[in-house]
Length: 532
Image (cartoon, rainbow, N blue to C red; front, side, top):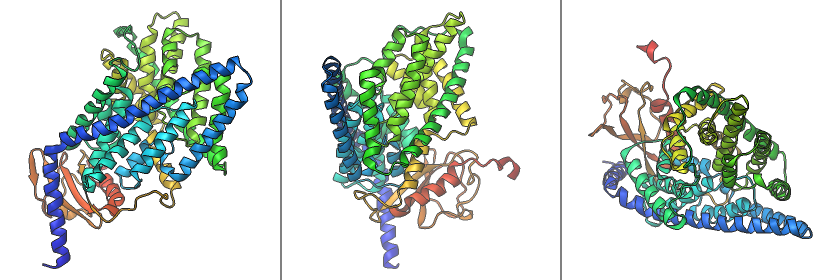
């Protein structure tokens, strides 16, 4: 046997043996990554809380001492300068960070984990702490993912395990950010890893639960939003849920369109510092004129449920929407998760206010909750995650039916309008702009990576033999898992829906293999019935 073939055979054997052993230590590794990622996220949350206290103290002082206002704007401009330098040092900290994690899972991006950790932490604190309309959840997911990658690198794990630990870290980051362990698991599977295999599920659950346990020991057991007084909606009002789903679906599609246009406008600004400084200056202006729209908007949800006039709700929604576009479009570190939930709650409040003016007796908290879920489903297009996330954040699972109904309706409306899911849209834009790796990017070292993919019903490979399919170059199908049975594949092995393929390839070919498997195994073929 030639030497290079013997080496390849040895590598395949090592990969498969390690992958099979890994399932027995998944829980332990998940717990370890969950602890590390959870502690990083907890530190991020605590620092943001301190920054928020400092922000309110500064604004209160400035409202009583006008001479301080120009000094505060100078402080904001200095913070914008620091963020600009951080973005220059590590460009992959821009925005929420979730598209960057998805890009890494697809082998399209290769960030330096410790650079992202340091720069994202500092940049997120400066941007969110200054009052920009940004959330902590996207940065928390990216911080958690990079903590998982760092743990994998320090433990010298192979690329396959590294991706699993990145998923674990992302799950832990969302869990610790929102005290939402189930949503952390579902989001990491539905949006980040895009694979519901048992291995990923077990590790993500262990990581998410560990991070949530640590977070609750620091921040307490209360949910993020207190809707304990919300009553279940009567069945005869369910038609209103569908109407709200239509509304949030339209608004969600408009939100994604406006994000793209805001980024287009910012791209016309050639000087990076001017681009970064603009939202910081807006935060200073709103801080002294309209402070309700500052930050992610957590406190604003409580004000909505306490009762706000319809005109006030419309005004806050319009200003918050525009400020969110100005903040996120600039590309500074910060997420859109919490701001979009707040906008959804405002939409639900407006909808409830209109119904009340029409003489209908409705419960405001119900529509605030439903507005969050509908807006999330239309924008992110992860409806299952949205339903569970809102349930965990509000501390109540009594609204599952209405949450599911509004999410399904909003999802369908946004899909019919052909609005691209926000994180796919952001990742596509990021990849288009990156003509060359950043200075801190880690170039793949030619390591082997094992890619797992399920075969969906109606996919092109269903019912076909492996030998009859044109697979991507420099890749090798090494395993076909069918239920509890693991097959050793050959050219005559017929693939079925539900099979899970394990494909070995070089890391440098990962993105091409991912695209090919997406087309062959996960894309449903509309002409399937015709072929039959």
